[in-house]
Length: 610
Ligand code: AGP
Image (cartoon, helix red, strand yellow):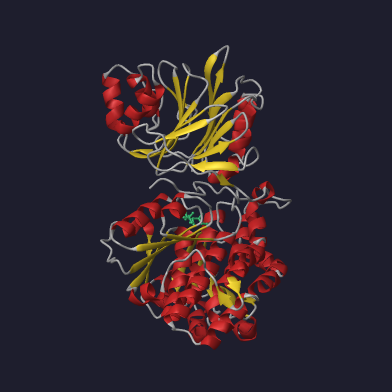
């Protein structure tokens, strides 16, 4: 997804902006650019297709651009192919304005045609350029008034950074549906898409809300509503370490974040277990509300959706209430059955996924109470939900999620226990057993990670397979979905995840000698059933990589070609252990294939366009 950085202060802006853009690389991009106001030469824009290093080479690491105010941008192409001309910043035809944008201007074509009919010439194929040209069209000397007119004219999602050659002592910003943060420093101020880009300079931030406009100078900033009425903003202190957003000696962020899972799980769960009970202070779900609750609607995308698939099994078991899981992008258009007694459980690592944000707003409008599980503090979903529980996984930089997925699962377990205690749907001894086992999970994760060479070996055998299947039943199927996505995301190998019992209803036709099938058979009550499905594919020549618990490994080894085992645990907590070998398998396969593991092609860490 696009990344925005802005700086206004006493220091040379370009090197600061380049460093900020490098810290946003994980968001995914295909081009980058800078706009700097030079006191001698005016507003200068340098931009290019490709990596940020190309931009650094063009500007001698920013030293060739003089000036203490500017904007930087990394572009993830939506409208207009990746190219130098389509890169941001975009300038107005007369060179007065430079604009960077994250989001989509949905009515850009009609605006572009109108402006062209007014004699304005466009340089790019992008939607964003209409903002720069509209600024020139409406400009009569007051930049803020001009911004209001432009925002009233455009439709869609935007995080905007705007600079004007006539007033180089300020940066203007505006947001709707796409995140934007202000960084507050002494003698300088910053603008960014997320905290990672600016934490090196300041930990004091403000989060812009939808419809707000900000004006930043070196010494101060102001925030206004859509009518330019001043808005008081709360300052937040960011308390995670910069090192948390750096590789720390690992070859890839993904490797670091897989290894961090025991700590992330411990940080997320242990503070919320007090004297043998789950304590979720942030939660306001009363016993009366829970008793009247008619359904839990889990809404998410991608891996967060896969957490929801696993959560359905867990929460229905613990609460004995209906749980429906749906893709956020589908929820809005399926005429969902939602009442005031529906709890919408919205799961999102970034807290900015626009499909999930829009679906959450729809669920709220239909009367649901929203509980969000989010990793990024202060993100839009977190701020708009009725209740929010943060995963304390720390910043997750790799596009392919790992520790955020497993800490989201962890919070689902805690939510289930919290609600079951209030609904009296769990015997005290069962409750105690699960709480006790939660405390064992970090060391069991460490055990799995200490044996990762076995998985590296299997990856070395199978990394060139054109297609890999994941099968499992019940909660194993949920983990198989995530294992398949991880493999596809970072190794670009085609993969399918199937409920093991469903394979024979069609897809087994694709199984032929040499096809690799990863069979997840950790779910004890269905072990025999799953093994019989394994025999079905084995009889058609498939190679089988089996995954199960230690207590069943010997039995499974009689049927499969290779066996991976995870420590035994409570059946409801199994996904947290099973997913780690799946993550490692995907990682090592991608490593063997020489893929760009942290920044896979076509992908973005936070998808803020529909
Ligand atoms: C997961 O590895 C992917 N990066 C992707 O599927 C991701 O889970 C999805 O885009 C949802 O992101 P969110 O959790 O930030 O909402």
